[in-house]
Amino acid sequence: MHDLGRVLILVGVAAVLLGVVLVFVPRIPGDILIRRGTFTFYFPLVTCIVVSAVLTLVLNLFFRR
Image (cartoon, rainbow, N blue to C red; front, side, top):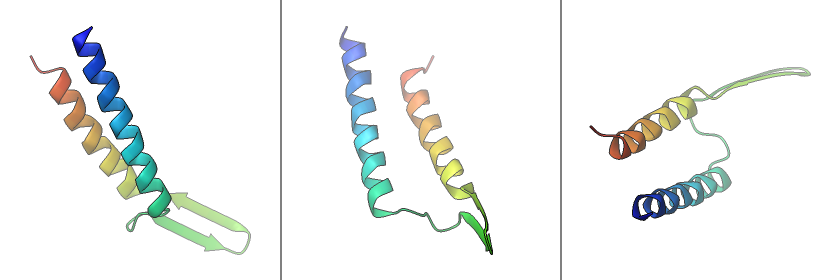
């Protein structure tokens, strides 16, 4: 149960930090945004890379062998 508590605390802290980032930085520099008339294309390239790196670090901390 001790490990489950640590995971829940970490997930909660990560959710709060992600919420703060999303509130104060609605669009991360480096993401692709193309607007042509009524057509809008948004691809969060840098956001995907950052989220992938953070998840890799967190999962490596918990599932080390």
